[in-house]
Length: 165
Image (tube, rainbow, N blue to C red):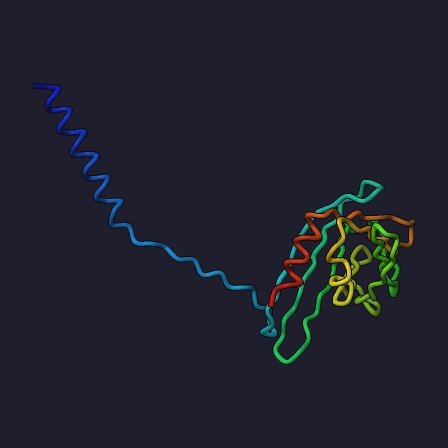
């Protein structure tokens, strides 16, 4: 008798669960790209890397899409405050594996928000490095020459930003 009672409870419980889950409405997500204060769509990739001296850097590659304007792609390099000092105005050298050096112009040529921040125009550079497995960034610093090696997974992420419309 107790067995029959337990059997009935289990079957009833399973039946209730089955009925509940069969009437769940599907959920749809809407993903909207961020829009800045000027109404431009802003795509960005953020990464953290360590240079050949052990300094930690934040890299932000961002693409700004404004109506009636060509896309603007920039790479911002951020170190801990007072750990390094960028030379402004100074181009960033992008070195490929086949020893090709590309130059990215300094976007903070007139005024940088901080000495440990650099921002460079990657609009022309990014399409040229789409087939690279890694690149090196030769940082224009006052103290000494430092290099950031950008690995393939980050370059793939940057190419996704390049392809955004």
